Amino acid sequence: ENELKTLVTSLPKEDVSNLSRAIELLESRPRGVQQMCSQHSTLRFDASRAVPKKLMVEILEGLRSVPSSANTQPWTIVVVQGDKKAQLVAELVAKLDANDAGTAEYADLPSAMIPRMEKAVSEYKKDQQANVEGTKSAIASAPLHVLVTAPTGPCLKEEPVVDGVYLDMGSAMTAISMCAHDLGLGVHCDFSVAKYGSVYKEVLGDEFPEDHFVICGISLGYGCDSQPVAALNRLPVDETTRWMACDPAWLTAPATAMSPSSYGLMHLVSSRHCSHTLDVSKVVPKELISDVLAGARCVTSIANSQPWAVTVIQGEARDKLSKAMLDYFDAGNNGGQSYKKYSTQNTARMQKGKDQYGFELYEQRHGLQRDDAEGRRQKYRPNYEFWGAPVLLLLNLPKSSVAGTFVDVGSFMYGLLVAMHSHGLGGKPLGSVAKFTELCREVLGDAAMPQEEHLVCGICIGWPKDGRDPREMPDWYPSRLAMDETTRFVSNSDWA
Image (cartoon, rainbow, N blue to C red; front, side, top):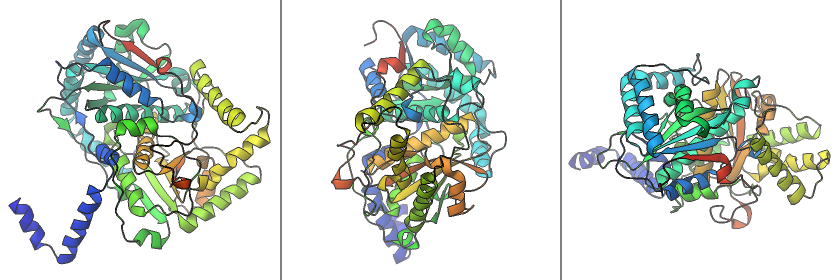
């Protein structure tokens, strides 16, 4: 305390004022963003303290609100507890002790990484043995081992593989982690166990989803009182964010206090939805966008690689881009992503979610027939008006990205959506914007939309019209599959 006082009194008056203002702003930060920034990896759990099944069900019910490509909800979650969990852990630990490299079913990291990714990964892998010991400790002591699995058809067999499904997996994994954190549980996400798919299939047998593979394992439980934790360094917001497509006056406007809120991550995950009526005239301050980005950067990424890049579009550039996209769309152009977003090999369950979405949006909500292509096209058009949002984020990845990189950007994208929601902001992911990558580059320039990057999606951000608080009053959203359709419990019969 004395050292802190000495430091503060030695600062210039202007710096003291800035420090005081920064503390004020942090204290007014919404609870949800504070929780996102406090997330960490638990390395040792209290094995004697069971997690009630109803808590796990609550987490999985929250997962149902997660957005996915065309509402396909491609994940299958396997919750392992009790005797099967003990058997599974014994086999996994034996593999790790034997330094068994396993077999990777999907590529987790690109062979060629951009410099900041390479630096972050090298730092993470500096003490690989400590990482392995942390994994062993977590999976051995946690009472629950949760698998996030993906369908092999779109992800492994289709050519090219469907990157959009991997993106959805990252969002699902992050939603589980956030809900668990809010409910007081420790969380340890681990991608290395995905190499031991044969172990999971052997131990779980018919309980392992047919034609699926493991994306990651999540250890869940109550942390020990003196638990060791792993808090990884995150890149500064400005190292992954480009602000050149914003009005100078907006960038330099005086900071205003944030509005504190008590909504925790469980509520925010469960209540988050896409907003379609945003107020273009109501300013979203830059410091709110910065805080959203700061919260989202705390999500888990493979080997802490943090591969994403964000371009913020606002003001004159936003209006110019919207007009160019509308003109291009109205001329009959549909465009296309530079990566594969949708599958031609949807599972029956994925197709059910997609069909449900199409029926509820176009036929029930808008009264359009299935064959009314022009009517549906006109309902798609507001995507290029960004649904009235005054701010648009372009979410990018290096073109060297592999499946695991898309898992990471799915995690980050979902982090952005929850942080926005925590502040009472509305918006939605816009895969539609990624169809016009070259147009973005033409309008904004190479610096804002680099040649060596994929445009994964846009995210529009604004205040809902009519003063609606999206944390309490949702906009329209499609039905989701029942939890039982996307979840399997492998547990002792007396787990309650």
